[in-house]
Amino acid sequence: MIKAHPFDFPYDGALLPACTAVLAIDLQVDFLSGDGYFARKGYDPAPLRAVIAPIKRLTDAAREAGCLVIWTRQGYRADLADANEYDHWRARRAGIDMKRSDPGSLLRGSPGYQIVPELTPPSHDVIVDKTANGAFYQTDLELVLRARGITHLIFSGCTTDVCVHTTLREAVDRKYQCLLVQDACASADAYAHAAALHMVTVEDGIFGVVSTLEDVLLGLAACRAGAR
Image (cartoon, rainbow, N blue to C red; front, side, top):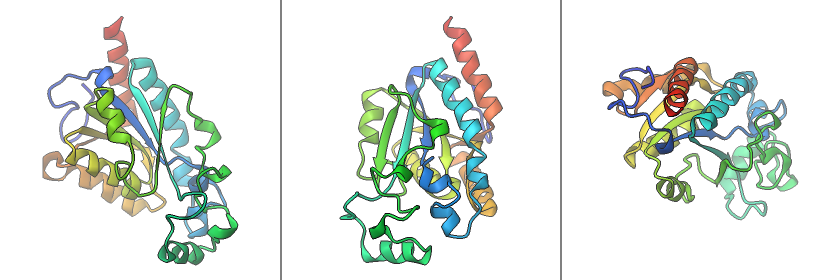
């Protein structure tokens, strides 16, 4: 089991790597760079970049334990067919002209759309591309999870309060057991990050549980030891 709050994960003590996936949400250049989306919106991207090393440790440990690792990327179609006038208006407020493919445009296929180089996924990891904040909406994420027999999800990435939380809530509604790694996720807004962590635990864990990276690593290490 993994030590967590408000209860340990999984609730029944059966932590099975073959049934567990780690999700690394939206760790893209356009979000984490100094001239990307968040920087242009006036936020300091440093808190987002601070989780790169923890997520590297988490995903490495997950693979070693036999868990599936899934990365998500958010962005618009390269031809902007899925961007409406409101999307363009919001981008312009941040000084981003999507039609010019400015940094922060989040256009599929552009350099800024890619996962940051420090976390480039190996070929056997899964990458899910999404348009919305939630990774289940109009993607094949659930198909992948069902095909692999995944029932338990460990969440990391950015941002805690938007894309991570939206995807976690979607997963809970689909009956997945969920754990959020508090120091392997981040927001550009410290208050929103703290509030998002708290919301997972309300009503005795209505959206799952919260744990630390070290406690998750200990649980994954125990799985590796037990498999030998």
